[in-house]
Image: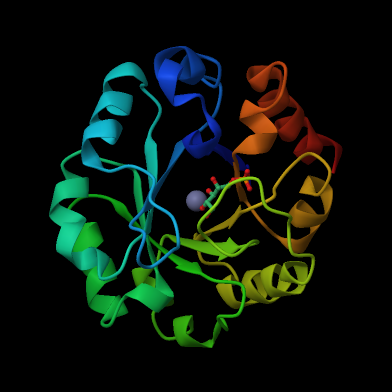
Length: 216
Ligand code: DX5
Ligand code: ZN
């Protein structure tokens, strides 16, 4: 299975977003972190900023909603025609119905699990999922340190997914340093913010991430 790389624009220079986005054109997706200051202890940006991103980048959008009761905003975010909308397991009451709604609105349905959240709740709704995001830090901020215990969770998740075509995304502290072990554990979709946008040449960094797979 080929991997996908999704730079998180949270780590980009917002005063120069168009230039920043032009540096990561060789990525597969653009990871967009929406934070509400409620579900997570931080506020990032909302629809108007993502609309601006949409105007200057042709990459498919991968929207990560770190907001309470995201079902209230699914119609709004769907208007951007994102490839993926991911909601948090912990922030939704009727997850299966929320996932169905995301698909009905035309996007792929993703669910994200905080580090302490078990995989168990997903086993009966796998058919409603296109992507599982294993958070490898506690959500809310870029630039945090990867939690090594998540490697076992990724392996367990890979086993649970089996032959289904569900992407296994990792997000938080991902870099070239831990990519070999993440790949070996079964991750297929790699979000990286500070590692990519903090690199001297973000495009080249993305290429190196791809090469990791070829070498592995
Ligand atoms: C954290 C966000 C991440 C963040 C990753 O809550 O979901 O997408 O931007 O940033 P890095 O790669 O710097 O850990
Ligand atoms: Zn994210």
